Amino acid sequence: INMQAYQSGNFSHTEFVLNGFSGLKENRWLLFFPFFMLFVLSTFANSALIFVIKTQRSLHSPMCVLIGAMAFVDLSLPVFFVPKMLLGFLFNWDDISFLGCLVQMFFLLFVGTFQSSILLWMALDRYAAICIPLRYNDYLNTSTCLKLIITAVLRNGMFVVIVVVLAGNLSYCTSNVIDHCFCEHMALVGLACGGTLINSVFGLVAVFCITTVDCICIVISYVKIFYSVFKSGKSSRKAIHTCTTHIIVMCVTYTCTMTAFLSYRIRNSLSPNIRVLTSIMYILLPSCFNPIIYGIRTKEIR
Image (tube, rainbow, N blue to C red):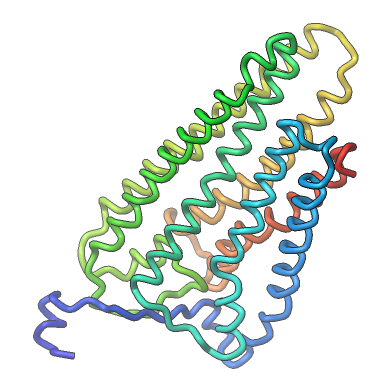
């Protein structure tokens, strides 16, 4: 390396090392077993749920299709980083190219944003089914579904592309060791040798415009649903049961997501190992438990 170029900031790393759980040192390989079990559980549970919904014609309702879509997202997310992470634990294959890091970041962020979008679609479906049942088919038809999908793809894709491009334009001339098991946005940006204020601010804007806006809309939908149910005085145990299932999934998803997000943006005393564990579990926990929650609490699927 030309030291003059290095010191002047003209040098930028093209290879990085994913060094999550570095505090465990030679015992890092022991992590292979719990994370492998979680990966197998996620893959099996989500694949089984998708298979059941696809093969049973009675489950081809909009709500079950949305549950299948969530299962597909939960199945896909761990695939983007867990296999490489497990190989790193066993064989210390921790190297990743800068381009590979940005590609991994893009797919994790882009696919991850659809957890929020699908939860919103579920809330809208329940709102239409419970509050305006006679006009359900008018509001939730093929045309409406296509509009929702296209809007989510454009919105989520635009924000994620800008986040990744901004990260890609930074110069990484200090350390090339990412203290993480995958290319987490702030873990990578934290290694930049220039100013990263724009990255941090736009990251917050993206979270607000996607996750926070979706969450607010979901809460409004469920408030209207419960108000309508209690106001009518009708026996709507099934409606309440279905909504409660979605609320449980929503709470698990958003709690894991916001905990991981805030751990990198708010000063805290968390050790690097705990911060990495939090980031991994925010993806793996919902992926493992969402299909189980839907399988147990949805009568038709059960």
